[in-house]
Length: 94
Image (cartoon, rainbow, N blue to C red; front, side, top):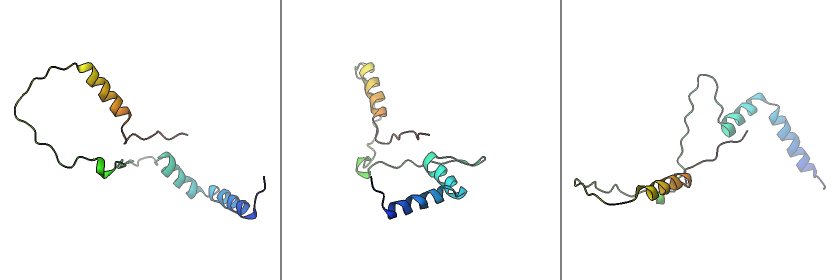
């Protein structure tokens, strides 16, 4: 495999960046979500498509209606839906 001079220069530049403590700190913060002692991290998870959000809140009924239903399938649907939700993010690897 031939490596061009541009590729070599890019790799040398990348190595030089990793020798800079400020660059390492920035990468640890951005990629691994590291924080310094005493700092409070805030992660904003807003990756849902605006079209997937409900348009308006449906009015809540003031009448109580009893429905016969088996709770087990609803529980399983809820668990599966939570695991497959679009806003779930993969934990960063170390």
